Length: 318
Image 1 (cartoon, rainbow, N blue to C red):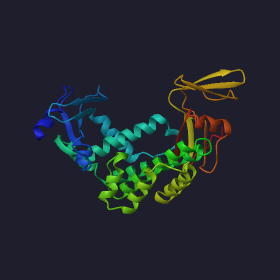
Image 2: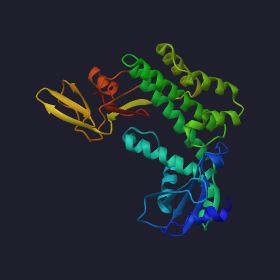
Image 3: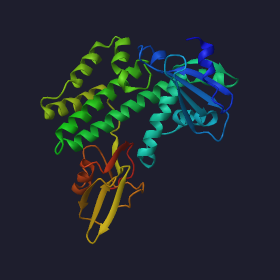
């Protein structure tokens, strides 16, 4: 495809692009003939949040995402300068927002600029500074320990789910290892290719090991927890933070509370002092070697709670 043809896709009638960048797995060197081409287009339009368009006009899928330029720049500054993870900001929505922001920012940094007006050309070039590698490695490290904490809470009641989360935790830790080596492309599925580029045979061996189906879930869980601690040690233990998961509803009945998820399944706990559904209150928090009370633990095991991790702060003991 010629660059002029790709540039033609940046005009979606939402304003002239101040920055247009071709990105994605193809530009990162990992894609194949079935991969799409991602096109990030920033415009000065304060009424726009996110506007995705897919185009097949040129014989391959082009995934065009038009974003408000000032908002994207603000989010990148938040990544660079903000303290994370802190207990008050560790919510499911905030976690997902940080992941999306990292994906957008890294793709802008690693992509091919097709059009750039001043000062957006220098801003895009500045995304390649060391702070971006730091926050990408930090994300994968924290995510690995968050998933490892979920493993510890699940292993007694749901060993196969715990083994699956253990695999995900090790994959996150390997992504942190790849980021430390300079591979910042922010999609977990390409971790093998990132390790291959780095010549990391030890990392690839670990990846092959954890992707194999677990014949003994208990053994796999223990192995994955050891691997996370070896691959991405942290100076200070991250504390668990449990809040309601998305889609939870609550109803108080006499001496108990019925908790449902998407009104498809429900669980009863014998207490009436739980926060209302939709609230962002912390139900429980604590260090990684301390388990929550049994009723809170049961809510988590049955997927009614979302688990985050944060720097130690004032604990909510439930």
